[in-house]
Image (cartoon, rainbow, N blue to C red; front, top):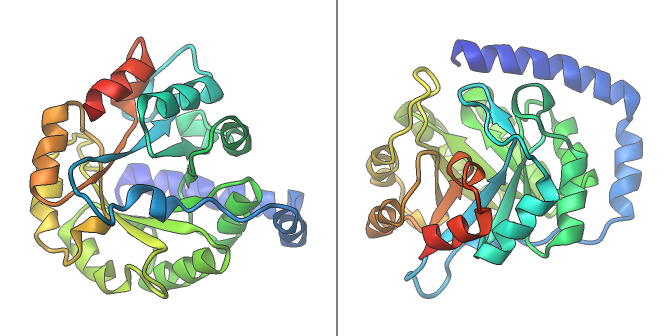
Length: 268
């Protein structure tokens, strides 16, 4: 892990310990029992027929460690509505408060406003957070391979399936991809996506070519999600030419004056 990631994970362990005291697991289970089934995040973004278009997971975040404040007039529900109107297939919602300006409460608010499935994007290092995500209304969670042991990747994916949620397992470097590749889709295909983070967490620079290189190592490109650094329809076209038809875009769209128009133009 990079120094930035180590710092965040150490803080996250403290936050999770406090959350377990404030809201015991039994209470989360009770909340989940009162919810309906999760929306099918996997089905919303994986192309099972025509491969002519790209599915967009549009991200709601106020700030980031690398960019600082991205959008001062931050209204997560209004932003999600614009993403939906612009043609996004799903929403990624940051829930880390300190570094990204997120809150768990944003998930329910977004789901109440639009019909798209919502992914909780955070630094998941404990099963409690997956229960917490579902109780907050999330349909999917991000799992960052750089933060997790191999056994945790397997256990967390199993828990996601048990809760009816999709997992987006994210890797950056080839070593981590090779470490987890055999576990993608475990225990059931149809619940697991593989994300390629184009941002180098050591330099914080993004390069879409990174997804193109990594795609050659993956047998089923339909489950691949290219993340970070995607800003133009030309980027999307290059990814499609390499079999990648799902992208996660946040910072670029969050900076645009009219998010709905920018979303539509990116998908054009």
